[in-house]
Image (tube, rainbow, N blue to C red; front, side, top):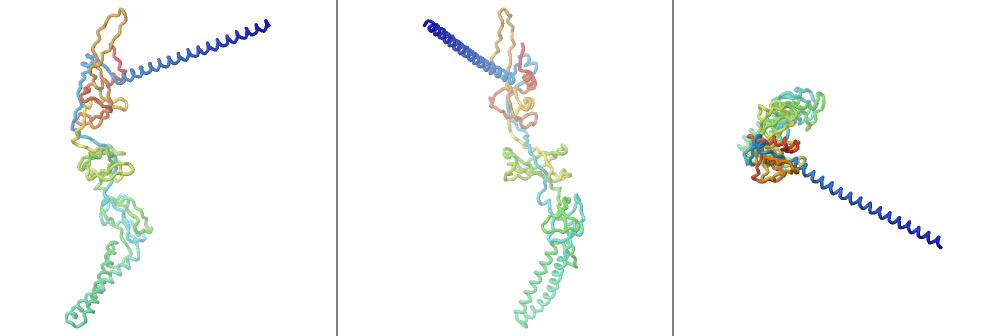
Amino acid sequence: MKNTSSYLTAKSAKVTQRAQSLISLRALRFVFACFAVISAVSCNEKKTEETHEEEKSTTEVALTVSQYKTVGIETGIVEDRNLNKIIKANGYTTVPPQNSAEVSTLIGGTVKDIYVLEGTFVNKGKVLATIQNLEVIEMQEDYQSAVANVEYLQLEYNRQKTLSDENVNPRKVFQEVKAKLAAERARAQAAKNKLDALHVSTKGTTSVVPIVSPINGYVGKINIAKGAFANTGVSLFEVVDNSQMHLDLNVYEKDLGSISIGQVIDFVLTNQSNKSIKGKIFGINKSFSNESKTVAVHAKIDPADAKGLIPGMYVSANINITNATVPALPKDAVVRNADKYFVFIQEEDHAEEKHEHKEGEKEEVHEEEIHFKAVEVIPGTTDLGFTEIKFVNDVPADAKIVTKGAFYLLSAMKGGGEHTH
């Protein structure tokens, strides 16, 4: 019995010791968890403070009064100014429809001769090639036969008219001759019109049909070869008159309200020289392009400047929008940092920095500081020493903006914005 009691007492002691160990382990884990939470909160607060300080240091800069005077900082406000606003647009050279021709034939035939090469300048009516078709001989015969019949019927008409007037012959005979004469005249005229359309003479007989240029210009593509069969309705030659060259520029909807007929443009060939060529807007489309969502604006080029240009050349153009009143600052007020543009605003009533001193340390006299803040802007047209600006975020209308010395402030800000006394 005694042994049993001792055994139970020892077992109870072991259970109690194990429970105490488990409680201690749980308490230790709780302490570690609390410490981790406190450390995380402390780190987050520290990181937040560092982030705010870093953000502040990259957008603000301070100068002492003496530095302010030495640099020669000057401030001003945004003004509305009349600037020669420019709208940028891309496009290509082209010619009016009446100055470009696809030459084809009204009658099929075998190509007999070709008289021009690509790039050859030709005048209107110049024979570019000839084709052969035996049906042309029949057309000439029809015309000559109709002309002969008209001559005979004209004489018969005169004779029958005289007899009819004297009541010698019935009126019906005269009417029949008159109808035949009108029919032959119509047949002769139709045959002549066909030959004229084919540029074939009504005299003699020939199977050769000339292919002539309908306009003055340069021969482009030649789509036939000697001995080949030329079908009707198929383009045989391309002729382009470059003297009336103009531009088709693509303008976006947001800029359309500033575009008007008569405005002057300056453009350069995108893939060639940087020589600037002038033009003038003469037409604006009234519908959008479904693909680019732009409106085509047409600009005429002076014929003297159009020499050497060919249709299809890509251009970059500046459309000059005159007498546009826009908010502007002196161009030196706008500075660039990386891919963004900024102006500096002088901060009024900026809180003075407190300088702590250790016990026994001599109190130093700190010079008053003037603080500036960088504000992002979107620059526009630059003209007459002023640049159009748009603020990314709203700023007070009477804000003092640095108009001189902005570049110095940018350099100080990029250096970390630190200020030593």
